[in-house]
Amino acid sequence: MRTSLSIVAALCALAHNAGSARCADTGIPRERMQQVYEAAQTPYKYGIVVRGEGNQAVDSPSVFRHGAHWYMVYICMNDVGYETHLARSDDLLQWQPLGKILPFRAGGWDQWQAAGGIALCDPAWEGSHQLQPYDGKYWLSYVGGALQGYETDPLSIGLAWTLDPTVPEPWTRLDDNPVLARDQPDVRPFEKETLYRSQIIHDPDQLLGYPFVMYYNGKIKSGYEKIGMAVSRDMVHWTRYGDDAVVANGEGKQYGISGDPQIVRMGDLWVMFYFGAFWKPNAFDTFACSRDLVHWTKWEGPHLIEPSEPWDETYAHKPWLLKHNGIVYHYYCAVGSQGRVIALATSQDLRAPNTGN
Image 1 (tube, rainbow, N blue to C red):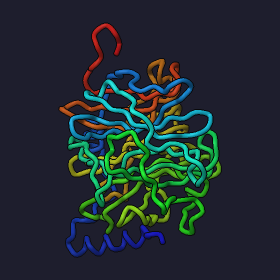
Image 2: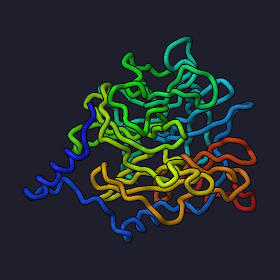
Image 3: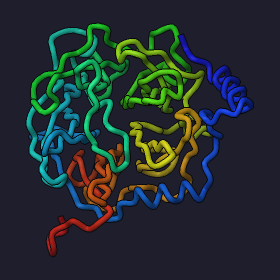
Image 4: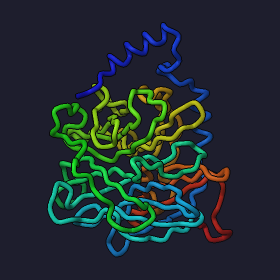
């Protein structure tokens, strides 16, 4: 079943007429968007922080704190497909790979593709950055597929959990997986070819009537990708929300990518960091803002990050941003002279003198 945005809009209008403040307007003023842009700027490119082993490429970082350490969930890929790995850091700069948490497995809908990212991380912009357990477990969502190769369609979305997110051991995959797939009866036009990376947040206010909200990008046959939503009460059963995507670009050409959303709470706004590609030159990171988690105002100004160095001269995209001790850290997938790696940019220059990083 799909929740209709038109019904939600009507309910919001009734609530507004009754004096409720729960349903916000759909536009964020340019001045407020500028403030978000300035808060998220990271002009200093620190350099590469995670590389693959051998011929492996790495991609799609997501970072959380647990105890005294920082952890990064990221994906590694080769000619076969995607696996999900874990790394640890004491300072957010130097990262030690620990091992696999979603490896290939024998058989099943996700045997050759398992590209994961953390779920239910504290969304506060300068918050704890800790994972929020649900049902006594820590969670991630992942893109899974049964075919070998680079992002070989079809791909679907699954969930996995662990009791200890710091241990490099395989997470337990849900028996109900995949939770979202292109062949389900409520699939929307923008996701009929395949589904990609997702992020799940916990909304304690239940603005949409559900505690868990997922954002993910879906693709049609032409390669055009948009970001849509789904909601859940129990992290297992998911309902698509709305009749179409909530963030899209390149509508005129019906081509390009808006993808890999990360959601944070910055003051009174929800901020979605995401990457864009091909509806403008190159691949880059940008953002959109919302008050109600449904209506998003896209930033039309300078990119948060874009190609500028040899290691990211092809693509600088797929964001994960956090603020800690007054410094903004922007992790991203960099593609360039060093292959596909994970790089970092910061709001203060943290590079060692005379070394460049």
